[in-house]
Image 1: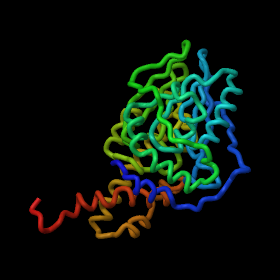
Image 2: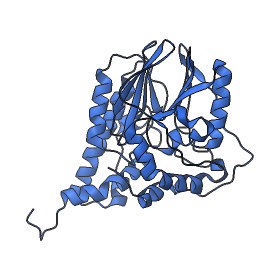
Image 3: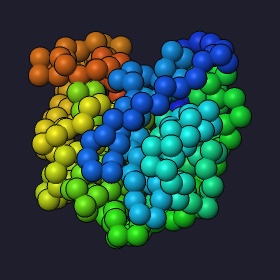
Image 4: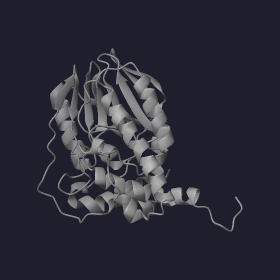
Length: 314
């Protein structure tokens, strides 16, 4: 499901602009595996008090240099991330992977050499098509946090396979569902799975560009993969590597069934957004917020599918 620029702006531009010129991002890496650190994003919507820094970032120390998986929401964030990551490893950043098109993951690209930035071809095409709408919305929400941030495209188009960095190998998986193209990576040395926004953990999944059927199929592939711990796109590390996948899939199945039933019951979008959330999801951050966003993302199309016009025989 793809969004128009108007839909993107409607979905994101919900909060007032607040200038934050005097503030900076706190980049605090936490080691989660040998040679890999996690920079934890806020378990909240994009808003001025977090500067849009809501996505998890991975820093990987390799013999060839520093590798980043995602680079945050703004130029300011990217610059801070680069400084911290290179200070941590003592090596320059040689690769920045952008896992998908959403701005909290890839708008920090201006801090890095674009020839070292890599993404799936579908991600590059989606950023080119939809990125300006996301950029406009981010500036409206975050104000001065976004100063100097330009829309940039990764220069390296990836295919599924492996990339070796002086003996440390990352397996690249081309999937989809959260967006039209979602990159997941497996560190062969430690077994850590870096899942991007295909997996959320203790945080309700967001769906602005989601295809739920494709998303569930991708989750099944990740679940079948031989891996260790899992770093989700949002939320805490999953040390066992399976609970976060199951939780994300459970939410998506519940969401699909709930919205279908709501339309059959004749509920409008406001009523659907206020439906009860099951107790098993009580600990998920932003659950009500994401349910209401998902209603706005899916309801019109579902109504068109489930409530055909009475004057058309099909």
